[in-house]
Image (cartoon, rainbow, N blue to C red; front, side, top):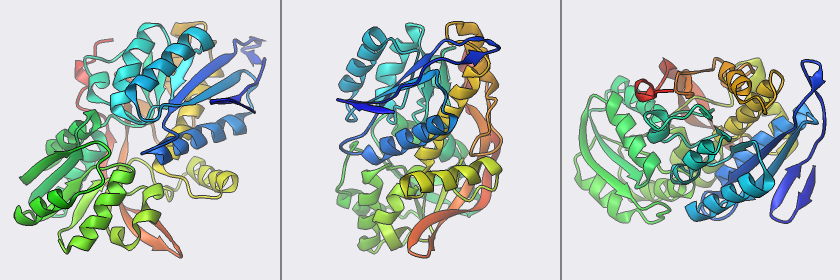
Length: 379
């Protein structure tokens, strides 16, 4: 592994596939490493690179760049990686608006895109592509699970809150798809917003019996702290993005007891996950997050395809990706017809474990769950 200006490279050379000299695979990772939301991109990167280090595959090289959470920067980086760096595979994007700016053009140029996070509905349905694989979830999924949990918990009048960008819209659509109660109010906030006084005042006046919110990264930290200080005492439900490992330490006691939904948790009891958590802690001296697990799985999906096919044979490589022949940290995992996961989604509760805030699984919200857009995908 070597460092260069603006990029982190794991540069490695030749090996064998099926007894023949294998084609090297060059990966371009574009993710958020600075500014708001940097923690999410750092975790994606670190999970991905942990799997690369463990595999020690001499045919794999990775170039990593910071998109600064700006669509125009992401597009410029993708263009350079495709045209100058000659990458075979792109990955890394956290935010759905950046994914929508980059992915359609990348796959149209014959590149493979493996998403470790963003799963906008547009790319799951009519905008699907044979070279696009999402290794995390379709954006609606964890919110659908939150709606299912809210029904089971007897919550009948939820106030809904999400940022105004593609994933925020998918979030509220997903929640409403499963939720059977009334909606006391619905607000789309600014992406990157940090002051939620006005929104909390609306929640207070709404007559709601619960709050569902999707505010990833620093947005969630700000909202939860302000909500806890406001004296509004309504139960809060959300997806894992608002209660994940990197957020909980900053939020502290305000998050204790909150239920959230996720396809992954550090206490999932399967061999791959136990080994991943231990290895991540040993490598980085912190607990892994949802994003880290997704980065790790994305790299292992890629490595599993490299074991079966040359990237120069696009049809064979695509078929190898579709097989998803790797041990996922989440246990059972397979791709739907639109190259998005079919998987279980769990209910987690925020707890304190010694001095660390974390999550534990307390139930299953949805079993063997796909997404609502697969039928619209014609590949």
